[in-house]
Length: 216
Image (cartoon, rainbow, N blue to C red):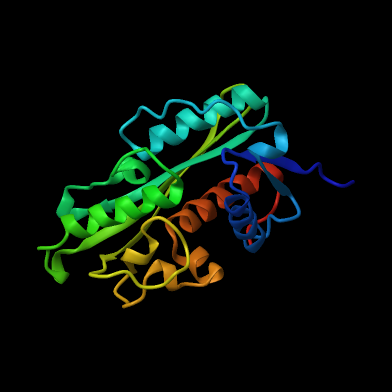
């Protein structure tokens, strides 16, 4: 007898994020068992919850619970951002709006990166450690938290942008100890090392028991 497909709504209207998460689940052997939908697939857009917490994990939890209540479905939410050691962890949970909330996503990204470069002007290469962090939360329809995961990608802040892929701070983030930024990676390469990739793989492994798929 064919097992019923588990449908999970990703708390995002961005189809690229849904495809990225779906691709990682397929790599983990769960592609036939779990289907991901965007908010627009289930009647969105919806009113955005107030992400008032000061940690990635709590903001992910706020979003997952809010959208589960709005959609009456199981919801996966994430919150992510950049932490720079020389800036005491900033921009952190404010990564997307660090230099202001006005304008388009592209305009905000440009201002954020300009602010980052100015803040790091006097910081030596050896002191430019940073990381991308992603925290995920999966909530059931009744508000039960099914799983929470955290993924991180360690690296350094570049002295100048490199690459034209990705978005946000990608062109300014040197991955690991290599002289290559996140914006220079292919989609597959990025999925293997990114903070969201790590958090998603951990989530996939936690869901194995729920859908009855044996460990690979």
